[in-house]
Length: 140
Ligand SMILES: [Zn+2]
Image (cartoon, rainbow, N blue to C red; front, side):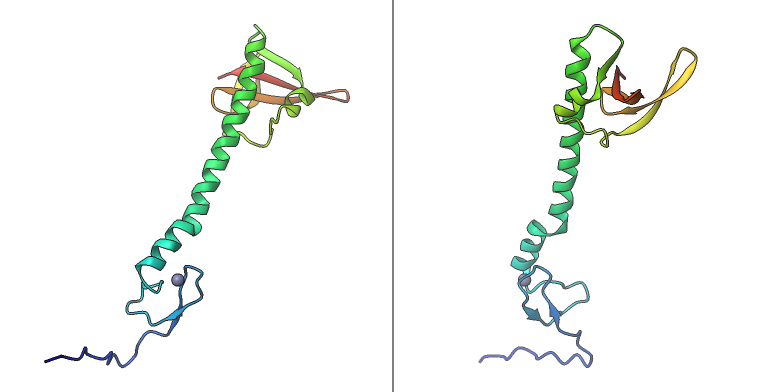
């Protein structure tokens, strides 16, 4: 004997939803936290959705910070000075992005506190002298 499955007799079923994975399929949710047609669609949304985009964004930012730090390190190590001063256009041409740093640090120099933008192991500050922009690099 075959028993028929009970029909959904919920007097107020949840309204039909469009699957959030992007497939555009409409489905009847069974629970309020039911957002995809089935687990395959949930997995697809998980792997292709905002979570993945957010993660990719974080990786991208980390890469740009690392790149900046490597460029500072390269020029810092070329010199034997504690504070390396360069024409900013040189470092900019190497792909340095002055808008990318992790924090601002104060360094006392000749009894004056100067603000540096810290990356990982190195920090920098930009100085304009006349019409020329310079960058100062020091180790943290
Ligand atoms: Zn779907």
